[in-house]
Image 1 (cartoon, rainbow, N blue to C red):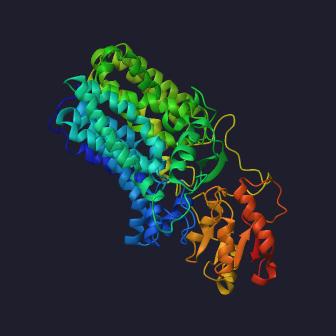
Image 2 (image 1 turned 90 degrees about the vertical axis):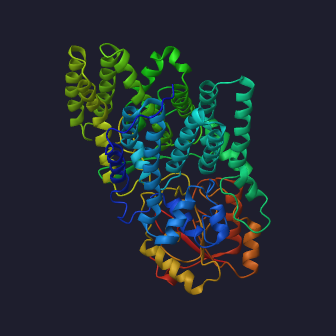
Image 3 (image 1 turned 180 degrees about the horizontal axis):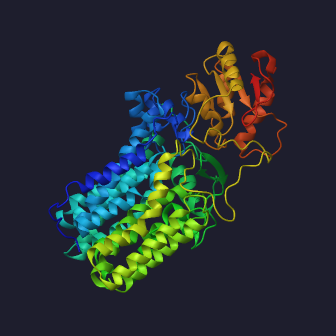
Length: 607
């Protein structure tokens, strides 16, 4: 039941939680790292012209966009325009968005369950390890979470203040769509169910309200898609699409391809003691994915508690608040657990607000109705799960498992013998201790990189360094640790191309991760060929022919033709053949090179 918020009795509590979030999210962001170099390079390119800004061009020449709408990059680009191109300027909007989500979650839960539950929910969100690590990075998920929490707030207000707030709810989900496309729509069933259950009046009228909100959702989701496809002038190719249209990106690479497995994959980066290793997404799809060795420590600390609460709700499921947060949690957990396509473990930060709200409200529910029975069981189960997670790698703050065990035993005994409110407060220690320690550890890292994750690498199939061999150049993680400095060899090549090049200083025929350092660490007009994965038809061979005829392109940096492995797309193969037919290898001695580059495109061609 939605209740009016009581007067604040601890006006310092929420500011303290938000201040803690600021420290966790902002600590060391000024240490020169830029996070995900793919997006960092795009932000720099977006500041070079209006069309690049509007469509999210990866390169300053406007050849290809990033593989998502640029909503999450617009605040970063504006920050760079104001403060200059620095790592902290890129990450500052992320910090503000993350703290805003914590604040807004408090305001939302407060309307539903009161001040104490709201404070606990905000604290849980702020201390969720995957949320801390993603809010210190420049991936789009931080802004997505903010928009979804804003939608939940507007939905909660609509139950009391009318359909105007329902329209705002739909608008915020639409903004989330322009951040990470269909992932934002995952929570729509929970929002609709909560509205229908939490409002009165004829069902027909409520359905009409939902239909009106659906119109707002469609307009706010697709205006940018339509703008791109109907843009009359020159524009970058839509990165990640098969045919250059934004619609294909919505329903293909960033849509059903994420669920079905029809798309490119990637790896997962684990930061541990300043070292990074790369592994698969986060385990095979299935009901155990959220609890496996890689994903478990990111989001699942309180997930067993939250699921237990949903089981014991009974008829309370009819309450709008439980439908909202419980539905959000169930739907996202199921989708993320069984997604067979491109799936990275940091996506689970979208579960964090629901885990926080359900866990906080659930503890309050268990305290009121089951303080001597189910509440001790819930504390014991959560502590046991924290002990198990920590035991997977005892070298990473392994001492916390014994602290959790000791405090859990004491809290359970207190709850059973004398269930005072202080006993409930004591029970929070074993529940929050280890995720808090992991979050503080994440805050010590200087960069989350391309594929951020908190905690150690553990268990079977744990991350291992990438093999030096393999079919063809797999370069997507070049610069993925948040650094983007050119090597001496790369700088000599770039300087040579500047002295002897034309309008396009250098074209780099490789995946975006290998191109990004050239864009970040120089102001030269460098373009990437093929977008994020090197597969896009941008530039096409027709564009290459035109640039060559107009004298705009002279130098291409590309992997040697003798590198084994088939091209990853017909467009990539066509470009490689074009280079071989129209360009000649430049002797490394001409630019003072020491031979083929390692870990990146290794051959300079003159066309």
